Image (cartoon, rainbow, N blue to C red; front, side, top):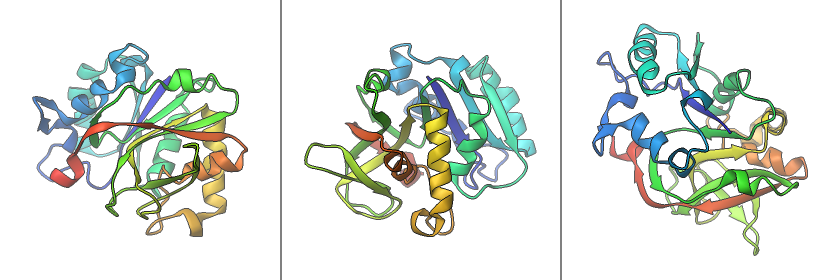
Amino acid sequence: MQVIVPLAGPDFETGADDTRAERMVEGAPLLRRALESRSWWRNGTVSAEDCVFLLRDTPVSRTFAVERLAEWYPGSRNVFLGAFTGGAALTALCGVALADPGAPLCIDLADILFDDEADPLDYFRAPDAGGLLLTFPSSSPVYSYAELDPEGAVLRTAEKKVISSHASAGVYFFRNAATFLRSVAHSLDNREALSHNGLLFVCPLFNGVLAQGSKVGVAPVRNIRDVKISA
């Protein structure tokens, strides 16, 4: 499995010559606390060599890559962007070029801490499984949401719209690069309906997975610690 981590947003650099990723949270730098607490990292499904980090091409982010990412995740790969993109979905798109095209993709925004027992590789053994979304109960409009059918399958997703009680934990799985790319195309074709404040986010991409005739499932997480809110 390939893990793509978008770190190229406007809130990544703090303005004090460092980054949010380096802020100490629960005894570790935030980025490490987030990525390495995931079940797929703890059980050895992924390692540093499977990670692609996306950053702005700025002196602060370049220094972070050399002095932190190279030490924390040796063998990982970086993509530097010369400008802000039109949202996290398009930022993640830039990392797919370096990913194994046949492997499942994990897009991890690395800004929500949680406990989980998700097994995405087992989930994708089903031939009709196209996406997997991690969720927790909430009614806050700061999150993206999934509406589920009575069997627990995703019917639709929306960004910053409380269409259900199933909030996204900021980690998204796609069957492979082709599934992800077709989902991005779907969001571009339906930008007005699927964008938020003019930006394309990752959670609404699952509408594109559904449009491909594939299923999107959910896996629960618990013990949520949202570092975006607490920052």
